[in-house]
Picture 1 (cartoon, rainbow, N blue to C red):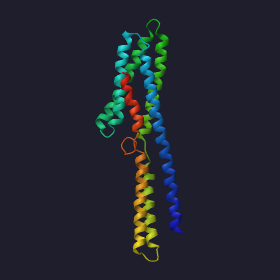
Picture 2 (picture 1 turned 120 degrees about the vertical axis):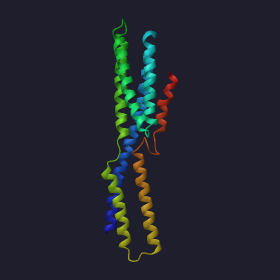
Picture 3 (picture 1 turned 90 degrees about the vertical axis):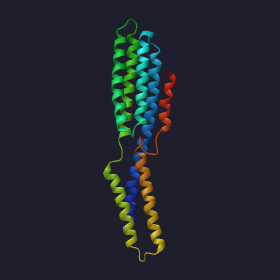
Picture 4 (picture 1 turned 135 degrees about the vertical axis):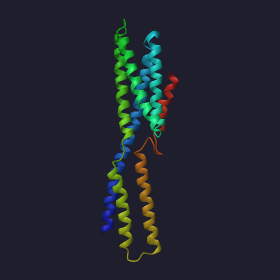
Length: 212
């Protein structure tokens, strides 16, 4: 009975954790698609400015897009990762100031105001995406999953009347499957460094380079 109760507790915690992780993973994918769409809108709105303004804006948008690509690609290289984040902030400020300066030019106030609205949306979704990509499963929950799985294995083994070969096979199989399920759950919570990554959504951002 105790073993069954522990099984139920472990299953509840695992289901709760996996549900939260999978939901957050889908939210990350949605945020990346949203960011790609907004950056595309920014690129298209650059075309509405005269050539004298358009050249500088286009160059900065191109650099900003590259920093967003590098942010995902260099997640395991802390130096390049931090540089891409800092560059995105600096280029974002420069884009904003170029747009503000353009708003003072004749007949460009509305165009610049529209551009600033789109830039604000781009920065907001970028920040939201970064926050979701950087977060993961709280440490105590991860440790609890492993701890309860090990406890269940010991309780199941020592409470068996006779530990024959098949009991050890069952216990070993449970430990293996438990660790595999936990690993997949933890990997899903690390979309920037794990094996399960939103590559399709990232490609939508990379493909925007063709517009520039």
